[in-house]
Length: 394
Image (cartoon, rainbow, N blue to C red; front, side, top):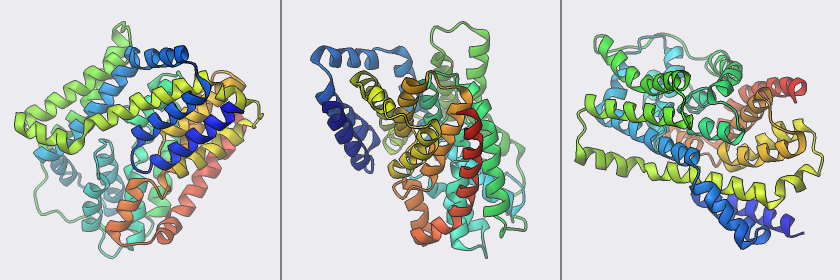
């Protein structure tokens, strides 16, 4: 009874507080659950397991560095140069420009791509602009190796990051195809550019962005690393140094970027997430929930989607669904992880508590009902496809 009470109250705290702060929500949820289910010695074990784990600390470091790269590219104008030199049709621009900006997490980042969509979207309904901005901005979360949600989720599931990306790649292609051919079917024509094409304006910022995953892959494949996350940490550090060096960003500018991007917030999310995960595992909650004998499809697809939608997050639902699955069915396979992650992702992109959704609606002056009408068919098609695959792999 205490486990049920503690788990229920922790989920209520998680859902309520996550609207304001995810790291505070997960920390509070962990404390509430621990208070009902763990002894003092077990609490000490959890704290040591979380804050003395080099892998967790390295992931927190990586996730804290990534927004600084985005801030440096924004401050130096390199991101603007990148987008300005992507010469393509209007529909392709609608897809790629928010996707490129979405690769680097930054507070209010959806507002960076919104003006680009607005500039290239004369005659396009506002609902299409808002939906396209959200849909494509988050598409790379499925395969981008510097995405904090994917890094953390693969760690929770105890699977390789690049193996996870390989199995999520079909979902990424499906997401892009649905968005391009269904969501943007009313968008046509070519973009107008005032300046001449600059190859360096395209390649330099793109090189800064891809340096991190390239270094990560090379180090992991050629060196015997005590912790795989070391390669990722080196990669993002090099990308940040490149962004600062090429952008000629000095101490005072960097301090301003850090104040704006708040990298500590992202690092705290990782630490809080693993704190909750370790408390959750030790509390007996996974065994209790596994005892309900939920079919894997119900747990991974339906509950995963609902949790993604009501939390407006990916990490928190993964931290709940994966331990329950592992307890009930054993280690989660790569295909099972992929369909679970995709279901949570689809709930996340239409969540009314997802900040990018509300900000995009506000910018383009549309209602939630208008936004959901534009998102309904793409999300329904993607969810149905995910469900069909899940029936074979779960």
